Length: 457
Length: 47
Image 1 (cartoon, chains in turn cyan, red):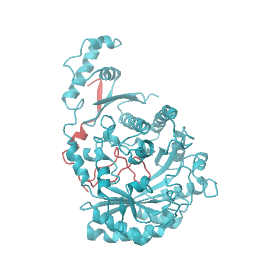
Image 2: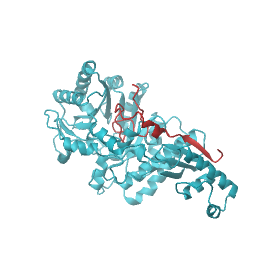
Image 3: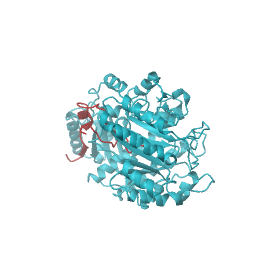
Image 4: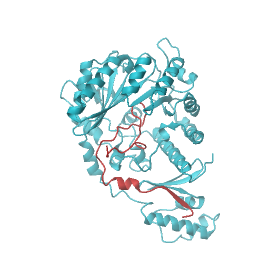
């Protein structure tokens, strides 16, 4: 399967099954766009008629080069080297090696789009995870992770800084067990920033390998959705705190994480605004919400959003200092094809744990009783449900099988699928269209930065 | 080649030979917890 596209003015081709990516001139692009595999040894005469703007000798030349790619396994390759059944089986046995720890279901903001219904996940109980439950969760992941050395724990919620004592106790406990069980714990914290102070900034920068800092962009955009309990904005409070945290972070990872909605379709301006406040690593992502929410996207918004991604890509070409999460693609050194078949591992390699100790496939499923997997206080783990998640990959999700982006996207988000389509297996086309556009932008940027092409708006 | 430049070779296919160790970071489409998508994360087989 070959995907041809033009993005930022650059004609390109992705050979999906081999991972090869090529930059083409107009002649090669036009020829490739018209042909089907397998290629004939010489350019068929009808191509001269289909493409009269080119000299036949040029078409012959382009044809010859494309044919050479095919012969060298760089075009029109198949996926016969993958055994989906064996790979699916390998993933079924994959141990649990990452946790999303909801140390708090309380929150000091009332963000309008919050997936957690502003903290309590719609359960009406605002709670903090006690240290005993946190330790049980750590014991759980150590036991279930088998021989996996790298274990990830994300501190999440609600707002994790409202349970900073639990966070600290968890880190200390986990680290105390590393040597005995041959584990390497890596911690991330996600925060709205309101409670950051010098002390916990220093703690976060010391102990967290990654910090995700929530900010939507320009102050009027941020404050429309990210409000305090009394209805005011949060921008003025959190921006200086985030700047201070990042300044002390050294080389450690972080992301400024924003959400764009139907209210700010010009979200490129928000990305650039965040970058201009001194932040190198930025992610601004489309809101996930049900269709009846006013801030959710509608079908007619899609063309504008896709244009805005390309507009953003053009701007970011001039900004080598900015790393935009969704334009980040590693074509050659990334994970193996086995990993690329599945992606996130929610429900099987990665689970969320609530303050009560309840286990869910990921944070988006919390509160949805049908998807509860168990509890860290007992051994009754729903393996059948877990295996259902483990069985999801790009060969078993019907819409993914024939998508050109499948090895970069790896099957989308089960939670988003459930929200929009009522089915974890069924990706929502709107989300997929955005994902494909983002990947095209990412690949085109790579080509331009490699000096293989110049951008044209 | 005058009409084509190869930006990336058949690296996906090559990765099938020794893949599947599972040590790589959990990825997510969103940067809400993890810092990588599948598209940009690193293989951690050597670590």
